[in-house]
Amino acid sequence: MSTVLQAQIKANTGPIDIDPYLDILTRGAQSARSDRMVPKESVEAMREAGLFRAFIPPKLGGIGASPQQWLRTLITIAERDMSTAWIGGIISVHAFQIALMDHETQREVYGDNPDERVSSSYNPVGARTEEVDGGVMLHGRWGWSSGCDHCNWALLGAIVKGRPMLQTMLVPRSAYVIEDTWHVMGLQGTGSKDVVIEEPVFIPNSHIHSQMDGYNIKHDQAEPIYSLPWAQIFAATVAAPSIGAARHGLKLFLEKATGSSTDPTKLMGDPDIVRRVAEAKTLIDSAELSLLANFDRMTAQLDAGEEIPLIDRARCRYETGTIATRMMQAIDMLFDVGGGRSVFLDAPLQNIWHDIHITRAHVANNPVPLARNYGNMVLGGDNADFFI
Image (cartoon, rainbow, N blue to C red):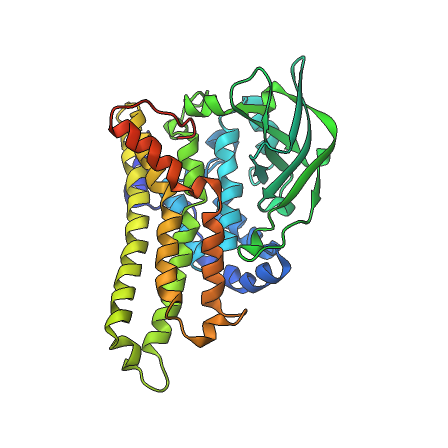
């Protein structure tokens, strides 16, 4: 690992510079919610900040950001708008998975435009496949493709008879249509609509990534960063924004608690309010610290030329999977005593409450099976999860 990357990892800093664009992201938050799509201006701001180049291989225009700095950037964006952070993370993380695929495929996607954008839907339930010579014929319907309106490619999950577990197919925009099905109570701005392939299209093997290759850390990249397990990177993508959103909720609550026009000390002097603030802040801070510490540890192991032990991967995956639940606890504590104005549909605290609860609905943020697997391994059992 280069000295520059080591320094970036240690300091959690690097080439993504989102600070000059935060006001743009703030201004776009309301229209993102009402239009059910993050505005183009916000997407362009993230592009200019370098977010979408974070994990592109350097030879194709990548900027060599560390995972830690990328995660901190997502948390910072989510302090302004969680939907914007969600699609920023989802779109940018796909470059990591594509970097694990065929080199010609990487050039096809990013060779002419290092800022090319890719959406996804990994749930294979609506996929129909037929293996043919040199690849797979694919059609069907996929839901929850966050940020798809801003992208020219999609990574779609499918089960292929004769191939192990989940396969991810890279599909160009010309092969699918987007159907607007995203009418939801939170994270409206993610625009997580349906992707539909009506007639079977041919997907060459070079455009297919196997879940088992991700689990086995199989790739042909020289940079050590790509030896991080793909599942760890993706799981962090859908967990980190809830930290920033909860921190935003705490900020709004504190402004109210310390800025009452009638009695500034009323809330501050309430022992129950003081306790809730302390517990919520500790939940938020500890979630961020544990997430970054886990990536510090994994990147240090790679830097030392070591493999990341499987039990460590299970532990990290479990801890990341608890973040959304912990942020729900934090925002619930605040919303419960948020006052009468918080019940109105335009209340900022209520919007954050909805966004974080929707995040917990993502399968990667369900800690129950992750706890079972990690606890079983601690007790001496075998790993049963291949997305760690």
